[in-house]
Length: 66
Image (cartoon, rainbow, N blue to C red):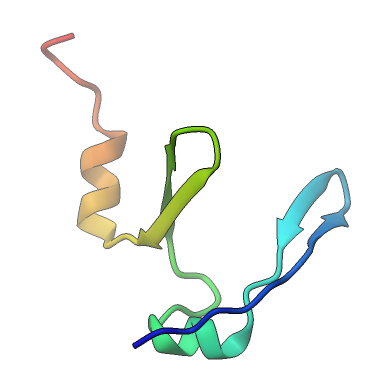
């Protein structure tokens, strides 16, 4: 499955936002209130995906071996 759309970065309050078109959200089964995680790759690549609550808890846990 492949969807390609363009969008603009907009200002909302003091933040900048990216509007994700509904067909993209539907294709990856994302909805309002879902938690997502972001990753940066190189200087021009961003990956994001939905994260499950148990995965979020693992990220939030303090790292004991650091």
